[in-house]
Image (cartoon, rainbow, N blue to C red; front, top):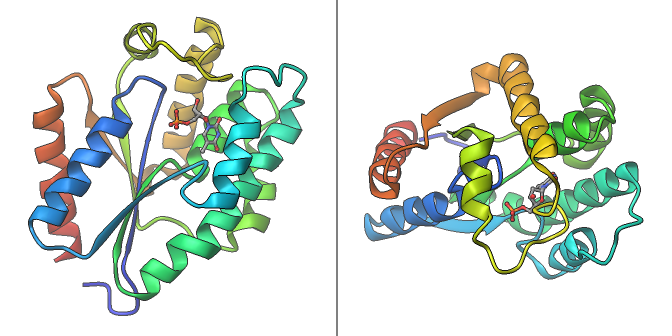
Length: 209
Ligand code: TMP
């Protein structure tokens, strides 16, 4: 075990990659096996960040500027990190977090065309060097993800973006993978949730031993 703190484990992927189902399944497996673990998500996870999430994702906010959007994600990230993630890591817990920095680099930096370096800069201010110990990327083609979310009854402001945007998010993640590949582990997300969940649980158990 990492001697000074717990383990910060982030799940990343396109919309419809199964990220939420899989990360919650992995969390449940770890709980059942007796690990000290918490589950959280971005944007959100605590009251202030959930309030910011509502503003970002409200389909009514059609006038939101891309840089405003990036700043709001970074603000919610900062508050969530300070108020929830770091205290849990200091208690030597495993933190399972649905999305983190690489989402901002793929969605705002690349898909929204702000530039990965620009978005990285404001996030460096927000996270002060606190990077995940590992990032699990659920690898599925954007058209598969999009067909999965097409059945959702409520679509938030980002879900409502077109196929072109979701293709760009996927390309953005590929770019992030090239740049930060040593910190990212890809898992084939075209399998059944059970197979993926068991595979990732085994990976995490090996990591934290
Ligand atoms: P979720 O659907 O995984 O809960 O995430 C909400 C949306 O926010 C999703 O479309 C991805 C998007 N997002 C960003 O664009 N940038 C970010 O930094 C984060 C954390 C999420």
